[in-house]
Structure formats: C-alpha cells, structure tokens
Image 1 (cartoon, rainbow, N blue to C red):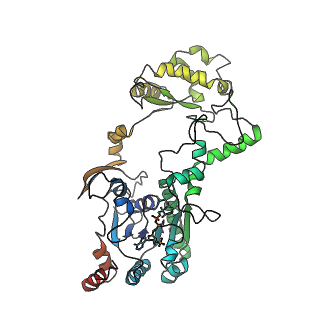
Image 2 (spheres, rainbow, N blue to C red):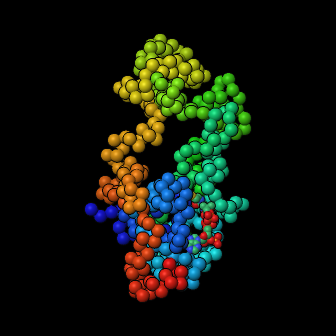
Image 3 (cartoon, rainbow, N blue to C red):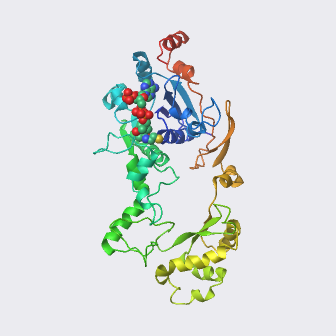
Length: 415
Ligand code: COA
C-alpha cells in the first residue's frame, strides 16, 4: 500500500528534539526525509544521555526513525554546492537552528527561492518576531514563557514544568501541520512559502484554556471550579490549579490501595454531572443524590474537597485497576495513573503500534513510541534511525555525483 506523503522529499536540517519530531512524523506518513548532519559529530543528541557506550542514544534513535542520514559540511564551499543540489531536488527544508544560523550559512529565504521557487522553508524558533526573536530556546524555557509553568503545580508551591514535551514535540506537531498545509496550498499556487512555528506560540496554543480563565478571573474575580474556591484567595493572574480538571466536570487525583509504597497507586476521578447518582451509589453516599446541598453541579462546587475526600475513602479500598473496572461499568470517567513501566508493558498499546519494538544494528532492540496518528490508507511501519552518514553515498548518487566525485568531496571534508 502507498503512503500519504509518497514522493515528498524533505531536506531535514533539524537537530535535538523539536524539529526531529516534526520530520519523523512526515517520514512516518511516507515522505523521504534526508537528514543533513555534520561529519564526525552529527546531531548532538546522538551522544547525549547515552546508555550504551558508542551507540546512538535513545534520545536520538527515538526521534529519527524512518530517515536517511547524509553528512555535509555546509560551511565548506563544496559542501554548500551539495546542499544547493539537495535544495533543488527537495520539496521542503525543515530547520530548527538558532535564529540567523541558516542566513549565516548563506542560505537566506531569497537564495533558497532562487534555487527552488517551490521550496517550502519550515522553521521552529523559540519566539516569533519581537523582543526575544534572537534568543535560543529549549523545552522548559518554552513552557515557562508560554503560560504552562505559571499554571502548573499547586497554589502553595513554585511554578512547575510538565513531563510532556509540549515545547519541543508539541511545536514539532504544529510545524508538521504547517508543512502539509503549505504543500496543499502549493498544489494550487505552485509556490513555496515560509512556515514558522514558535515554541512560545505552540505552548500558548496548548494553554488556551488558561487564557480563557484569565479573562473570566478579570471579569468575576473568582473561579469556582478551582481548588482556591471557596476558602482561598484569588490574585490578578490565573493561579495554579493542582489537579483540578475544571469546568462542569470537576476531577482530582485520589489515592488507591497501596499508595503508601507505590508512588503511582492513584486514580484520576471525574465527578461528571450525568453520572452523579451512580457515583453516590458506588461510594455508598446514596443520600447525596437527592440532598440539595450535593445534588447539582453548582451546589457541589464549594464542597469539592469534602466530596473528593469521601470518594477517596472508597478508592483507597481498591487498586487503581479494580477501581477503574468498577467505575467503567457505571460510565464514570476515570483513569489510573500509569507509570512508564506499566505503559511500556501494555499489550494493547503494542498491538496498535503506539509502542513499537525496533532493532538497531549497534544498540540492539529498544522500545519507542510509534505514530500516534493512524491513517487507514497510510499505515506506519517504524524503521530504525540511520547511522551517521549511512546514506551519504546513496543520496549523492541520486543527485548525480559519480563515485570519483563523491570520494573527492570526502577528501576535502565537504561531506
Ligand atoms: N555543517 C556546518 N555547520 C553546521 C551544520 C553542518 N551540517 N549544521 C549545523 N551547523 C552550524 C550552524 O550553522 C551553526 O553555526 P553558527 O552558529 O556559526 O551560525 C552551529 O552549527 C550551531 O547551530 P545552533 O542552532 O546555534 O546550535 P546550538 O547547539 O548552539 O543551539 C538550540 C541549540 C536548540 C538552542 C538552537 O538551535 C535553537 O534555539 N533552536 C531553535 C529553537 C529550538 O528548536 N529549540 C528546541 C530544540 S529541542
């Protein structure tokens, strides 16, 4: 079966995490992704957080599946010519260098357009145009400037960054959408365009509900679904909401059997309004179903702490999986707090290709996260990440270089 992006060639000038997650997705959808790296070194993540000496790290392998790797020194005059040939052959150039690096290399937007007017140039940067546009940015910086850190954690503690890589992988996802959209527009205009996904913007997009709450707070001075209500105080800015899920369906993380020794023996429990009566029955508080102090979502808001404490008395008598099984029977939304160990061992995730085992010639077998987006006509086969420069000769031959020319370029350090 063909793949959705068959025939699309990506010049992958990305490194670390944000850019590589984007191009990995495009590769999974069938694009030919040619990763350009510096000879001898390559993407810095190849050697970061290594768990096996001299083997590409899991950091690198898990972000660079289904790609080809070529080495080119793009600051070497002859290396630049090879890059030019690639620009002429590819549809999209994706990069996430520090601001200005591509220009300093001599590959400005204007120069790229001269070489290939159909070329789409897609960039991840830390910030969009403005006072911080020249700054280098990593994941946690993006979480801090995008509104995530100030709204994550508990009210009596400092801001907290989340384990979800919303700055890097989140922005990579945004960029991938921008690229396929630009490819679609190109089918009508015949022209390339610039695509920019700034990490601050990507994080803020994922924190949209907190900007909603900021405006609600400014208008009403209080947010009744937040744990600060009714006994705490609200300041000028949206506070950290702990584990509250907000809205008309309040939720919280509750202890389950074994919490004393297992840090993940917890369940997320949502007191969804339509199943309130069932919740009362399950936890043995049948009287709350009709008591006007508890029977409606509005009446419950000032009593959420007491209500969750009562529900927790019930969840503590069950393991998180027993609680999940019982609650699911009554359509009560809940979710066990799964550890990475439990997720890695989950058979159902392996069956759907969400967790995949990959074999690598140097490091052997390892687990990775497969494509989270499933297309019925374009299934994903995850193949291992390339060794540094593994496809240099193959790609150079496709560009029309002879064996002798390839050797000569290697001798002068251009590839
Ligand atoms: N041949 C020759 N030179 C190359 C090359 C190649 N194949 N590939 C990269 N380089 C050069 C670049 O031209 C640049 O040179 P310059 O500084 O002289 O212009 C240099 O390598 C380093 O690139 P840079 O992007 O500055 O790397 P860094 O390690 O200093 O910074 C980041 C890393 C992530 C902070 C930075 O790239 C950045 O802010 N990126 C945008 C935001 C982003 O994606 N952040 C998240 C990363 S997960």
